[in-house]
Amino acid sequence: MLNPPSWTVFWCAPERGPDRSMDQVLAGLPSLRDWADQHGTRHGQPFLLRSDGRYATEINEFFATPRMRSCAVGTRRKYAFGLATWLGFLDAIGCSWHDASPSEIDAFKFWRMTDESNPVRVAGGTMRSGLVAINSFYDWAERRYNVTNPVLRITMHRKAPPLATSGEFRATPHLGRDRDVKWLDPAGYRRWRDTGLRGLDTQGREVGEWRGRNPQRDCGSSPEAWCNEVAA
Image (cartoon, rainbow, N blue to C red; front, side, top):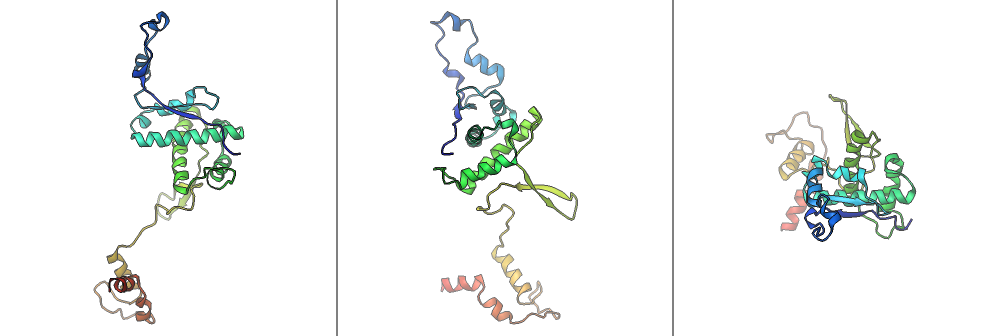
């Protein structure tokens, strides 16, 4: 599969309706501005046309939700193009968005990132942004159309309640740094070094029960020592 059928992203601009003054048929109909106001459509709201040129009513209903209308312009843009790419992929493999499963998500990930037949492969960050858009759409579609969300999450088990919580998407690429990674600041590193390698308490005193070996060796090649060498 080289290039899947393309869904096209457009942006609503009701004020740019045709001049109806010279057309008696149009003059008797509501203007685009009237129609947009009636349906809650706002300027700049995205909408998609299917790869066959038809208006995607169910999909575009998602962009009219209060949640999407309150998003920043950049977020709506990412969601629109993310969904357009996903829906084009589903057309190419002959799968309706109603019937998409985790298997289609895995195939989509492979095509986007790895498949050599795809001339425009993407990095992990772009893939994850697409998963966010797809998941948000299906979260809404589950309630609206009773479909199943194909974007699965990893269940994280904990000892304290709640015993299980939903974590990262299962299809999230492993190329990017996980959001749960924590970094030690210099003060935190020194506390770890002193208590874990040197056997000191929080006051800098030696702990009597400490049984560590060669603390000077273990601390000799620490990141702090490297920084001192570079500074020198």
